[in-house]
Length: 251
Ligand SMILES: Nc1ncnc2c1ncn2[C@@H]1O[C@H](COP(=O)(O)OP(=O)(O)OP(=O)(O)O)[C@@H](O)[C@H]1O
Image 1 (cartoon, rainbow, N blue to C red):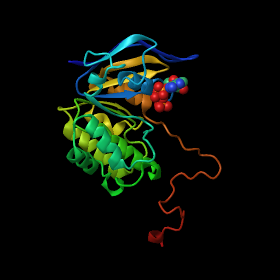
Image 2: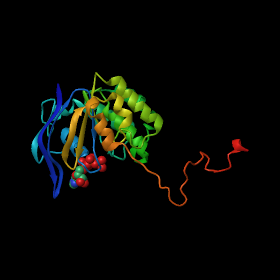
Image 3: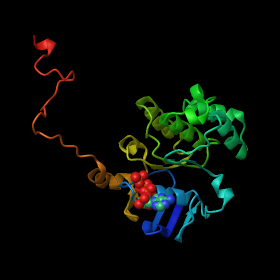
């Protein structure tokens, strides 16, 4: 089944062609959207979630146009990047309000707060949250009510390693019951879970295909090739302590 379908989708901001005619079908399961900075990934997500209206063309989620469509919006959860919240309420107040708008109560807020370890700071005002806390709050919000589809924009950004593992585990546990569309520059941890990959660059569709079929291409395009300079002062093989030639084990 197709979950998201775009036909010649365009979004233009003044002179910027953020999306320049994307035609793609995203099937059920977990989809990873990749691409260079400024390529149009977040714009695609905001069109899919009804934040933006297409300049031309169309996008459909569950067969419906998300712009101005409150009903279809209740069928998915979203965590945007960067997360945006009102500043002068607490995390709990915000999550309660959001849950209530979807017909859920405080128990559901407790569940997602537990899931993403938001509880230690849930009663503090959001204005005092660190970027990692904001990210965890945004993830908790996206999972309220176990929606049929969850969009996550950079879910691993700004969170510590333990939280990263947790996010991957949670998605793994929910896979099969929930569809995921994830944008992430840190994509390797997701590879074992991914069914479909979409690459958007320069406002255009670069590729779209089954994860197993495009994995090599994705690695070729996005695997970081970091070369260290061998110039003056560079060390071939630094010791973990940084004390070259003073390894206590060597005497
Ligand atoms: N609201 C906006 N107003 C004007 N220009 C915008 C707006 N949103 C995005 N853009 C521009 O559209 C282009 C695509 O941006 P977008 O955020 O979709 O890219 P991205 O692939 O998500 O990038 P990144 O990996 O850096 O997050 C960029 O040139 C960006 O500056």
